[in-house]
Length: 100
Image 1: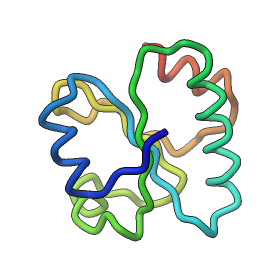
Image 2: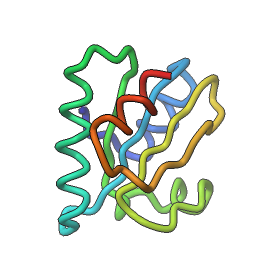
Image 3: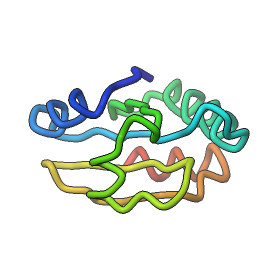
């Protein structure tokens, strides 16, 4: 997963047709576990680009999409937020979520 800034996110939103954004904080143990599961899921040939970003550097995005907790996975398609997922409880769940 590539780390992106809020500015890069805005550019990506305008350029990418479909992608996901994994939002975390560095001191969050659950976030570290969820990131490992997302990385593992990426190896399963899902055809989706996934970026990651530290919520501490996303003030506007946090407000716009009302991010209330981390870890959080945002799924976008055609510049529209399709899904905001906080429950990243298994690789199978992530795979089903990301492959669709």
